[in-house]
Length: 204
Ligand SMILES: N[C@@H](CCC(=O)N[C@@H](CS)C(=O)NCC(=O)O)C(=O)O
Image 1: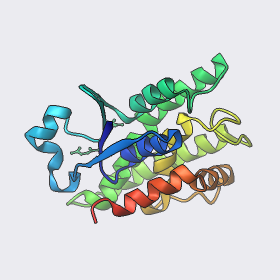
Image 2: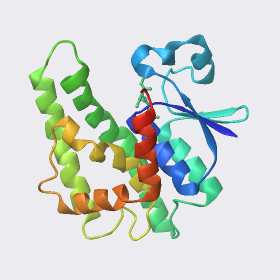
Image 3: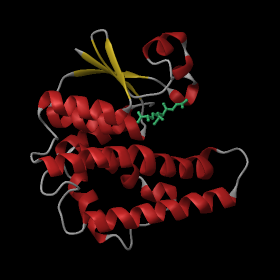
Image 4: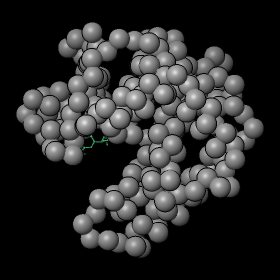
């Protein structure tokens, strides 16, 4: 059975959402990153970078949440989109999420919750970038149901967790009705609800 090393983190959430959509059996191996378990020799043997998620299938272990999404979607046939233009768009969203949305929203989490020395300038800087990101995503989504059109795909799964957590970061979607509709559509899915339930259990 495949194993998912993870915790109640944004990037773990993406992989769980996909596993639940595909209804693949997996073993969840919690790695308590708040208590340093990502730095144990046992876990470093699985991922030398010391980060979750990691998905292992036998001896093959894959890191980087969006690359895990892509591999699982290609293998299962779920979460991809049909025509070449949509496929290019899907891959571009995965890169955009990993290079822009993820790192900038992650900086807000750091400066608002984790930093020992507050830095209001840094927080304001990353809030401004995140607000531009939200504006961009709102415009790109437009009236479409999903980021690649009418098909729910791994592009949506990749972009979902940070937007789902926007209130915890002090961000608002008051001017982003399209994104709010999109969030609620995804929150209502059985696979997403199952992921939320598992998140409640992790670390408790
Ligand atoms: N680019 C990686 C980022 C993974 C990552 O940053 N994981 C965080 C949790 S979301 C982590 O394990 N942090 C522990 C640490 O850095 O010590 C991915 O998308 O999987």
